[in-house]
Image (cartoon, rainbow, N blue to C red; front, side):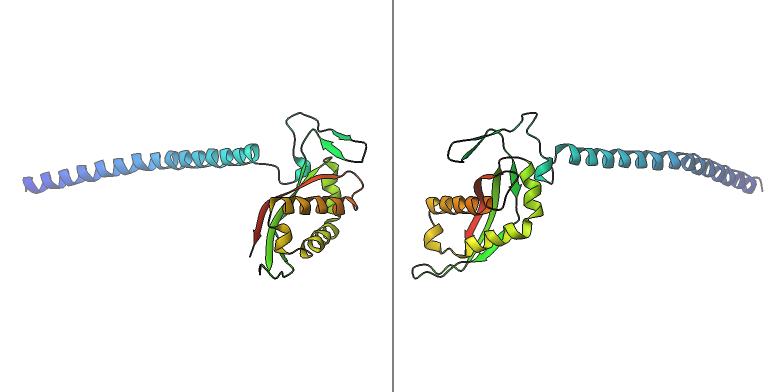
Length: 185
């Protein structure tokens, strides 16, 4: 019987030790959870800060030129020379090209970027966006691959777009048109 009591006593001691370990780990659990939540909050906050601090502004009117003021000097013949950079960004356009005998490309995908004389022109472009997009499409659909396949051909298109779009702008001018994507299919 003494052995039975001894075994029971050992069993109770083991149960007591296990209960104490469970209580200790239960006390640590809120600390572990709290620490995890704190680390997660710091990571999320840091990510949001990094996205805001290091990403480019969504709107060209919000862009800054690192403290430099952009100036535009008008020359005699109405040409503009930029000393700072303001750009208007557009999404990709896909337009149908006129058919030519030599080349059978039918579609042109392009992304125009416009260098502007003033940041105010961006808001005017946004206000007249349907008119601007329509003019871009009408100029581009009048082309065939022969007229745009060379670098000089693309420059001429940019000049023509600049000229046609400046007819609608009152608060400033488009100085130059660039194409960041130009693909025919």
